[in-house]
Amino acid sequence: MKRVVEISRHSRKLGIHTLTMWGLSTENWQHRPKLELEFLIKLFMKTIDDYIKDAKQEDVKIIHLGKKDRLPKNLIHKVTRAEDETKNNRSHVLNIALDYGGHDEIIRTVTKIVTDIQTKEISVEDLSKETEKEGKMRKTVFSSYLDTGDQPNPFPDFIIRTSGEMRLSGFFPWQSVYSELHFEPCFFPDFTPEKLDNAIKIFNKRKRRFGGGHKS
Image 1 (spheres, rainbow, N blue to C red):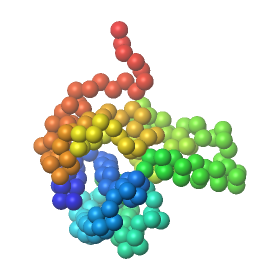
Image 2: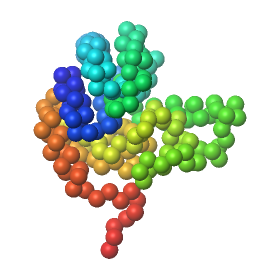
Image 3: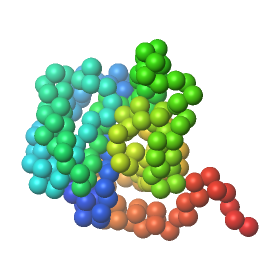
Image 4: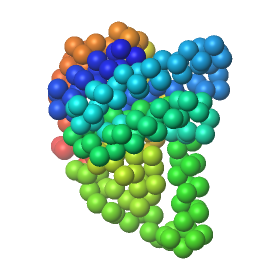
């Protein structure tokens, strides 16, 4: 948790607007030991308490991604309070993904869309309509229903996966379609600001084509 705060502070110094930290997946919630989960929940609550002051001073908007209905009530209260007290901040966004899973996000998104189609708020034809562009990425009516739907930068440029695993494990299946990926062999507690700097140097050397293909 100390590393989370350290990395988030360092990312702001680098000029990064939106940072997402994935702390607990929908699968973790089901398969981790009960005692471990209870400890993590206490840790999450303490970190949120410690971070709110930092967020207010640095104009950081805190947003929870994922389900809220399975989290303990005291954690939901702290998360909701953090969101409410930072909702008007604009300089940076810190997404905290707790009980988040990509498949679950898609299911929740489709459920909301079906409801709005049934009440004639939108039509099926509306889903692919472009609402605006973020660089070369198109924001559509469909993407506006995702957990990141109302954010200024919903499509991550760069995703870093620590622990040596060579997969995203369901992280942002819709939003990550053109994200650059970096797989770091160390576990997150060992992912220092210097390692973040090195990863970004690698990112800056890449040529992003967004489906444009190779030029001969």
